[in-house]
Amino acid sequence: MNRMNRDNILGCLLGGAVGDAMGAATEVRTMEQIKEQFGGYVREFFTPPEDTFAHGCKRGQITDDFSIAYMNCVEIVNNHGIIDEETAKKALLKWYEVPEFKRFAGPTTKAAVQALAGETPVDTGQETFIPAVDNGKGTNGAAMKAAPIALFGGDDVELAIRNTVKLCGVTHNNNIALSGACAIAAATAQALHEGTTLNEIIDAGVYGAAQGDQLGRASGKTICGPSIEKRIKKAVELGILAKDMEEALTLIEDYIGSGLMAAEAVPAVFGLIAASKGDLLEALFAGVNIGDDTDTVATMIGGIMGAYRGASSFPDEYLTVIKENNRIDIEGLAEQIEELWKGEQEHV
Picture 1 (spheres, helix red, strand yellow):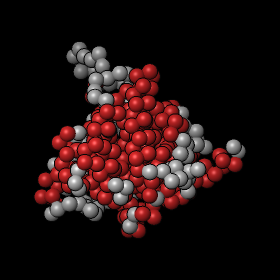
Picture 2 (tube, helix red, strand yellow):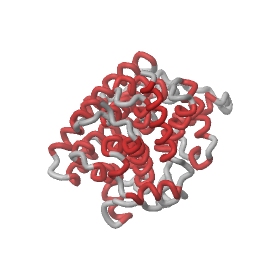
Picture 3 (cartoon, one colour):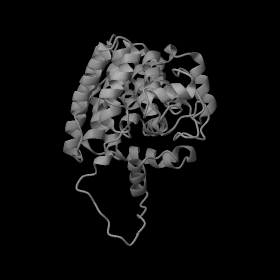
Picture 4 (tube, one colour):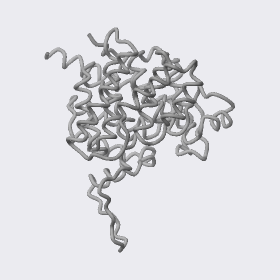
């Protein structure tokens, strides 16, 4: 039995948005620099400083981490729940048309958009070097948008993995990026199981990482990088052994990292979730304060834990902040996804 109800669906969406907006202010700094900048451990929304990627954004404004996921969900709903390559392409191109979103496009995403739009690279007159394998594409760009994909398959972990490969393969078609994305989607799907445990959610993430790696190798490029599956296991071990969250943050940052590459940020997500012992806000704040790619880490944590605990587990003002500072309607989207799911179940 699954928990595909409005509270858990909205929880996944709200968690992703809150993690992104809150983490946007702390991104690029170390844990100590975050404390110095904000006067301690961050547990609220701040306006991003001028020396962050989100400079110019308002307090509570989302960046690419959740906005791409949101646009994907909107397009999937428009396509009656069908997830395919064309849906992914349409969502990406529509996302790129929004100025406040487009500015955050990373190199992998930007290259994919330009290719889809038929844009020709500028000829510099110099010989173009094409590496055997582009190892720089094993980034968080796929994993950051993966949690809400699970909402279109209920609590079906296998379906979440397949849909993630379809959707994320358009921009990040390699084993490392897809391993990270499938780990997040699989964990979110498991979080929608009635009566599931935190250990089962983490185990689903490990399984998703292994499956994503295999599918990525089969359908796309095999690039250099460590095993995300094994690094998740190590991060979880560190999170469980830590005496408190502060120690967990230090251990995970020192041994795993929380940077732009999926082999760092995705394992860090599971280590922090393990250290939180199931406390949604404890896990979310940990992602915001671990340093480096904080908005992405917190977005992924928020999506998984929001699906697990539901929107009702967040302070009421969080939804208000997101609504007032962004041109998105996550409540309406949650309603549409729920209705879509109910309609599918009536035909089963």
